[in-house]
Length: 388
Image 1 (cartoon, rainbow, N blue to C red):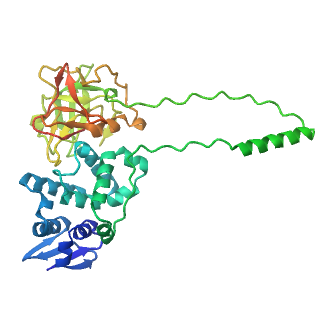
Image 2 (image 1 turned 120 degrees about the vertical axis):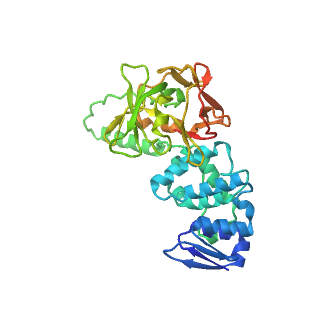
Image 3 (image 1 turned 30 degrees about the vertical axis):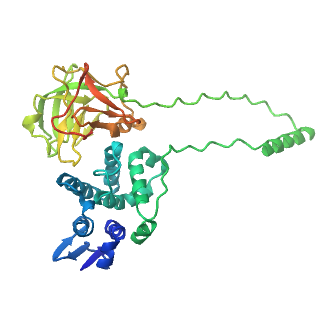
């Protein structure tokens, strides 16, 4: 029985180190420029995930999940974590950050293959982040720190993985140091010497009044202008197969043009005459030559395979205000400034709950329902899905 481990396969190296029974029983060879492979009990597996599942089945079946649902979810997270590239890594970190708001591990209530494989895959990305960026995805960072300390130092060393120092407290910006007393005394002495030497007096400089400190921006969800919209027309984008171009009525002088990447998820017949929730104060963006003046709010399932509209309650009318419970009195920004990242700050907390109700989790994990006129917005089937 032998396993060939690709030299850049951190995930499989970590799994073998974390399951010593497997490492002892198998002949382990390092290979370059090819997929990891395993021959075990007459079965052959290729690729990190397939090898990991076969190892777990033999040496620790609980790692792969104890129910069919858990096993499917473990596989999904393993697949998602394998996507490379800085943009894909950033997106995955944000997805994990949202998923882990009320969770300790990725699947169930115990360590699984999903945690081990995802941890190894994102390790290089985590090492590249500044303390401030780690804090911005603090649920992701908390989970990462838990996994690395759930493993022995010996297992990490065998996998070639170093501990990353994670500080879950908000980073403190360094304050400018005041001039030292010694320097002040030296400057005063030098000035006195010049005066004694008979140098002409310099003209007095007008002292500048200290400027008031810039007021810190407190970001709250009511800054986002959410309204009920009604899709009155929809067609395929002329230059992009994955995009729809919709005309959406929001009780303004004319319908808004909105471009949405929903072709893969929602048939065009199901797009027509639908009531939706619109984000109306994003900066207009050109998408393949068509300018979009809003964004349709949708819910995505945990496996990323299902995307559905966030639906306003029955009786809602185009233009009706959509708000978060507890933030009814807030006033939306006229237009969100990209540099302030208001939507980007709120979005990781946007979810559906177990009852398909849409809402926002604040820092204390309190769920604020998304409402229209006292009634909650929902999805058709997506539970615990992210909103965007």
